[in-house]
Figure 1 (spheres, helix red, strand yellow):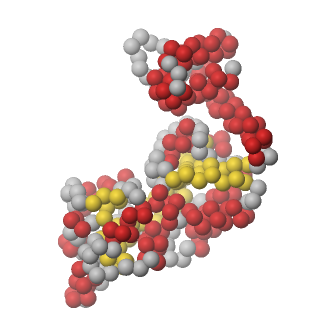
Figure 2 (tube, rainbow, N blue to C red):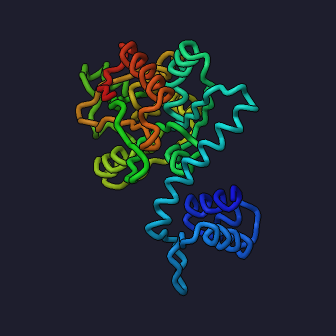
Figure 3 (tube, one colour):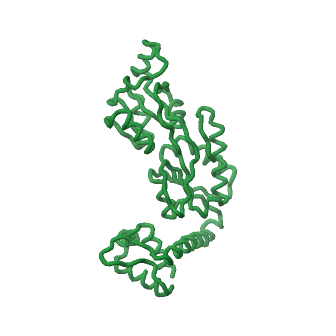
Length: 303
């Protein structure tokens, strides 16, 4: 029954029989046959079937079976892991690129030092939350808010967004000439902005501040941010934890602004039933300690 259960789980993850068949490298008819065999063995229907319906909907018993099937897969993976690594526990973490690059590295280091019995598996993913829903990630860090009956989403921390510019930019010079304390909105030239989509709240705020006008450069790869920020007159809004790493390399300055920028709120996600697990709680404890020790950033910590 193993193969039929795994086929069922893949359909639930993809929310489509055709997409699930592609991922499993089998035909739709073969996948449908596996589900019919599974239903025959169980003695009840798992899916609501309707003519012309493309969406996948579970019956009431199908919903309950899904919860059991997820647990079954987890137990199966643990049983297989006994032969691979002597039974060592594994923590699979996924995070946004900006968080993994600039903040989580010391957390990983501390966690491994304090918990040598746990294997750490790290992935950077812009859609980090999807891994939790698909059962391939234990703990994800993201700015996305997801509503789910099976996934727990909690805020970890909020951090200020700060203004950075090149050391030789005109924003530095104008402050010296005018003896101004803060950069003003009217001074900002979108042609020189290095824009990153940090969060939904940031995108909304940016659209309002600049009345929907778009910058000429938008990035999603963190290791390119410093390169472009060092260009003359370049500027950007970045989370304070990201700014710490960029400023340490030189060529960039942080300046205050005379308007409010919404903070970045980072959430953690995990399966509701796994939220209290030892490995997840140990990692969150390490993260809290690192946040408390980062005196350069005024975090608002929620864990």
